[in-house]
Image (cartoon, rainbow, N blue to C red):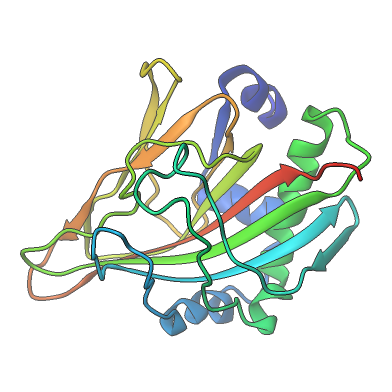
Length: 233
């Protein structure tokens, strides 16, 4: 079954690293991945946690055309994010070098190639939000990739791509139907491992991470891209 057929049938499709690299035409991966070493602390964690670092960017996108929008806040309602929703969260921007990087552009293009036809090829552009996340954990303390639990993001489609995983125990991705039925469970372990999700149909969550070696920190780096159809004005 093809990737579009699997996504349409199951509400998600998973790609191993080499498949993703081929799909996005990955080039200059090392420079792309190194940018996760320059993520500021997420200062909007309502649980007081200091285990998450991130940068954010927004784009207007249609097949063959991706334009970065002026920097703006990330906002989710509490219906989708009961922990951190309901406020405008101004994160530090993704750098221009990474916004323009061929891996970033390849991820957005791959999302458009899959999602656009399945959405009826809408005439309006897509509002794409890009998040660089680093989750950190030390001995005696867990890092929470999805502190809000299993959730929807309140968009149409979501891509989660692993960039790096170092000294990590757990971090299992779980996919659920709206009624709580488990639809799949797997671990993104290698750079480029990814899952593409229909956010209208499924929930997703990731179990807490802890260090395998308590003498060293655990790090889980991911790129998340969300796609929402813009409304015609």
